[in-house]
Length: 107
Image (cartoon, rainbow, N blue to C red):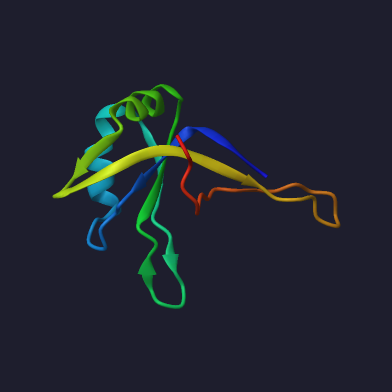
């Protein structure tokens, strides 16, 4: 089950050369960044082309979503809502949340 993550955004169209530091530098003016995740395909060692950026509050996320896009280095990235994928309960009864969003959200 997926639900919106109110404190994170997804940056789409990420270049292979764009670093975590580039993203932090471009987005830090919006608020305090807690994490930047740039997922890779473990078999090909290539990025999936997006990043998830988590903030300490919802306000920076709302401002970024209003922007709709941002330039990081020489690449213009689309800004989308990030989601949390809730995992089903395991045999031991614990529920677990994954900080991930591998699909695009429809606006």
